[in-house]
Amino acid sequence: MQLFISNITTGSTVNMTHVVVSGCVNCKYQECVAVCPVEAFREAETYLVIDPDECIDCGACIPECPVEAIFADTDVPDEEEAWIARNENEAAILEIAEGDSPVLADD
Image (cartoon, rainbow, N blue to C red):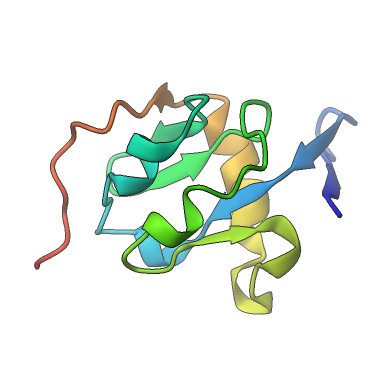
């Protein structure tokens, strides 16, 4: 089952598939980027987001995230639901993540 999010500003409907949540902030591990077959990840300064227009819902990224910050849209914890819209909105303006940025987390 996939979640459809209505964009209040534009009236468009986006098919969300997978979502990066707050656990990625100040970590920005790149393992998820490396396994993504379609370049769905976008890179902000301190975290990643997933572009819902590119994500093919394969789920390869979920087990790769060492901080467990990636969820299927239907499994996003209640306290993280704002990240669904954040992924959609920010992915539209961010560059494709190449997987070569420094990890921010302390190992």
